[in-house]
Length: 508
Image (cartoon, rainbow, N blue to C red; front, top):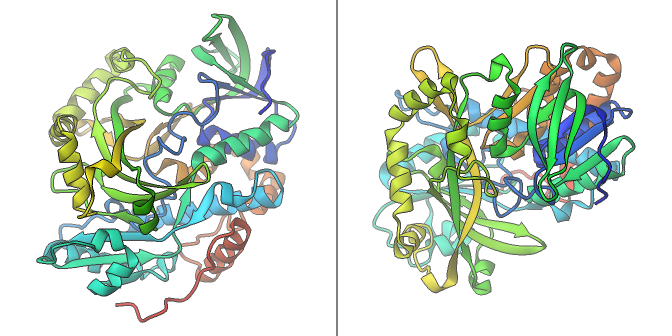
């Protein structure tokens, strides 16, 4: 990947952080307006080394097919599906943009970053089985979930997920749904592919090992950005018309440094992650699915356990987790002072209020930190009853910083999604939060473009290009079944995925 030693004095756009969000925005902007001058600054020595890396990313290919926390049960017993529908549609939009990039030969062949893999939800116990049955009935009312199968048949479930069923004491009822449209996405590989292409484009410069130390807005609404080379200590200033802060857990401190009024009151709660990684090839070979379960009562949404097949560096891997922990770092390669330095007068009350209202989260994190190796394996055995501790090793995953924001009613609330914070003049935007994040990056960036480049987004030139990059742009895939089937067939072909097929048997 070509990087520039000479730093620019000016740029039209500065992207802070070389993760999936900056890569997506950079590619979209260069397609929409090829003459833009873009400078990328990353504090580490390579792209996608933090949250976008495959080992650090807690979820790959989020499409709401199997993630039970996206479909909560309401007080009246019905299932809320709006978030799942929105995420599923957003993932289809991401697939379209990736297919466009491949057809334009902007990124490498799809097998390097995306693979077909069934998405399965698995539960046990009468109450959970009833929940999953209702969830299946509710989701399959929408064509985005066409083809989702439901089963309580033990023999069929053994075929779907042999590791999960072998050796299981079937005193309780079990059930699962299966979606063969599921995928595994290596966002680290995808991100590096996009930056490789960006580095070849005129007007784009990549600068690794540079940390943004200060952002100050000038009277003409442009930004003066001070960067420092972490190894040499060399300092440099860059002027930019637009700044995007896509630095993962590092976005919050930079947003606070910008001083924009819209950023006041925001705080962050860092949560570390861990996986059990399978080291036995014979075990890995027996599992070919992403199997998601239901978080235990009182646990936060981030605790949803899954036995997860992934493809990393051309090799199939098997992970179980996540196990959470607490740290004051906002980045895996960050500082223990990140959390205390983020405390400001204007966000202290929201953070204290959110903390007081989320005591179960604190208890959950304490319990997770105190877990012994045997207790971690015991949790694994709920999904793989015959698991042997010698076949698994603990791996440290990435950091996620959950958003805390001011709330007039409660003082402060803890958010579990992603949020764009943009200045009123559209000259700076920051992305905060975590899941579903990377899988919905294209939709998130479209939202950002609409907020920060409203006039250009209304221009015929940009509208035409957006329709070329994303054929469903401006249309609702959740409402138009024929359009969904058309774009799914196209993206499946270009991305080398399994073609959408009708269910092989009658759905329950």
